[in-house]
Amino acid sequence: MSGSHRFAVRALTLAIATSGFATTASASMGNLGTAYGVMPVDVATAQSLSMFNDQVSATYYNPSYLTSDERGELTGGILHAEQELRSSRSDADGDIISDSPSQHVLIGMKTNLGSLTRFKHPIYLGFIAGVEKYGKEMLAFSSETSETGQYLQYGKEPLFLNIGGATPLWRGISAGFSVRVTLEAAAQLDAVSTLGGETSRERLSVNAEPSLKSILGTTLKWGETFCPDSSCFLDGWESAVTYRTKSSASTSVDSNIIVTQTIPDPGLSLAVATIDSFQPETIAFGTQYKGDGWRIGGSVEQQNWSELEEEFAGDTIRDQQNVNAADRIRFDDILIPRIGAEYELSQHFAIRGGLAYEESPLKTTRNPELNYLDTDKIVAGVGLSATYDRTRLLAYPVRLDIGYQYQQLQERDFTIVDYDGNEQQATADGDIHVISGSITLKF
Image (cartoon, rainbow, N blue to C red; front, side, top):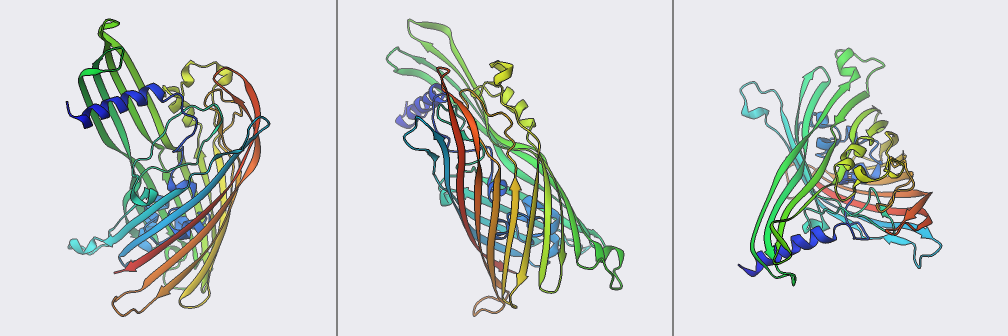
């Protein structure tokens, strides 16, 4: 057997053996789009104007808005989030339990496929991808218990990938559909081992399949719909509704180990099933008003986090099915309000900002062994765009965007329970700083 194969088998066995004893989390029940915002416009407006962002991030927030600009688009960018997540305890030497940054490289493209048909009806196709650690870590994944506390929604983010399309339907009404792509991985390990850990006759099978979760969106431009041939008080108003199904990445491992002279055939069977980066079913409504060189708008999101209780019931690492009813983790469905504005300083420059208040979906404050922490947070952002209509080389405009976001996690008290059942009171809070930049080429 090759050395790389033997290393893979032992690494998988080690992962099975230690999955329940890690103390920090490197991934989270979140993703790039909901935790911070995909593009600098989303970051800067605290996602309040994301449903009306004509860039490729529309494939996640509102795919129908891909129709708002007839031109094609190629976008590249980066996002860096500095996280200082704290849990203050009387017996702890330090209160920072997580400060690893999230670092994404972003790429997206949008184009009109209508020219491929004889009908010339515009059909827009777009995709966007974000990869952690500036492109070096595509599949961040972690599922752990903790004695010291771990944050529910922050950490390294897994691959963010959305693909979708949109088309105008009738007088200012457009519709779009996209999918969020996650992975469902399954592994089967069979081996014979001595008490000293020397294995033989190993057989390892790993299978990963994409899982596609739907996102639907529709946009209504009131003036174009109800008074297309004349001016009226509805001019400038736009509204949108989107629906995202729940999604998550998942991993399951089945193994059968025969230990010589100790565990005979058929051997010891081990099974692990767990999820990560869960995103709840979400319904969002947004509206904006566009004036002469400015716009103001907002959105409200309904996120159904209570569904995560059912997902954890089948998770063998979090093991919620076999704990006392009083100790089971509980989640609330939440409503998130957002508001933002944008103003064009000149033909080439625009500024924008936004605010949001996000209530924590974590209902219980005592979660033995898991020890999840999550708090309400205030989110504020600001950003700047610069558009260059003419360059020496390119025939179409070039746009540069930068966005900054600050998240203040409000203090919240929790009861931390270690593996021996000892309890300790802790206060969770934190600060998060996000900076994002992008360059967009039109064609």
